[in-house]
Length: 125
Image 1 (cartoon, rainbow, N blue to C red):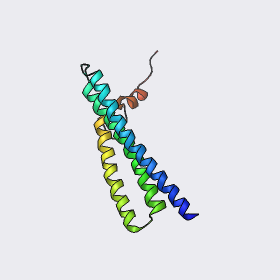
Image 2 (tube, rainbow, N blue to C red):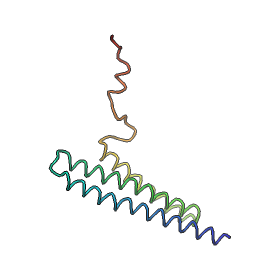
Image 3 (cartoon, one colour):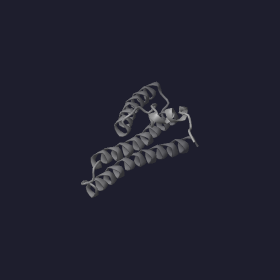
Image 4 (cartoon, one colour):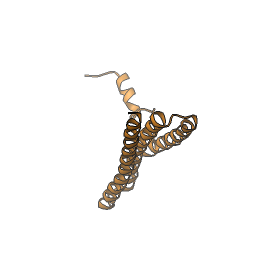
């Protein structure tokens, strides 16, 4: 039974990895097609970069999930845990970098700085 469970987890992690790679590849094609279609429009390059960044972020999340499942459930050794820690560290740095590139701000910053100030202003009828 343990061998069948290990095989099922192995197939599951491979499927998640394939999905992560597929998301990135499809995102690249979608972003390129959209860029070519709207290249004359102002901001097309920024939209291309943002679309690529979103696809890479989603793909990275899936790849990290597969690595976590693989390390915790299939190969729970100190060496594999150290490798997972390195992978998660690198991918976290990449995710933060891509988030800043896409949005122009850190993830913990509010999306609209003036939104908090609008609540504090008195309402005049």
